[in-house]
Image 1 (tube, rainbow, N blue to C red):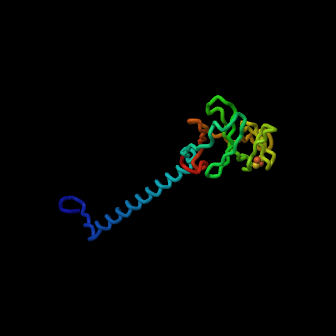
Image 2 (cartoon, rainbow, N blue to C red):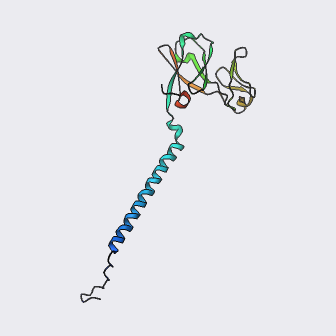
Length: 173
Ligand code: FES
């Protein structure tokens, strides 16, 4: 006890303030580093988990509508190598006249082909069949209720475009 009634405290040894400062500084740097690391991890996890929600889409020119008669079925391949079957079903002059389906069987990825005599798409790998609208009607795709994927279409100045993920289109249009 000091003469003033206050407890006596030993003065800090020389260099103690410096050690405290360095300790606090290194703790702060570590905390910032951890924060940055978890932040980066969070962003990467978000991109992975929600990648479907941010899929970049593009329009791709497929055909000149005036070159197709009702009932025509033509094949088209995107620059990325995805095969599409385009069918003209009506002659009203709108995008609804056309149907664009993936030619890739949703069962195990073989290529389907149009059989006009049977009015169906047929997959030779496991005898899968689809009606003209792409709905599975036979084989493993029908058992699993796997229809042919449909592309959104638009008709602009007589030209037909499909909308698809940039990875399917193969290039920005
Ligand atoms: S891959 Fe088409 S039916 Fe199996």
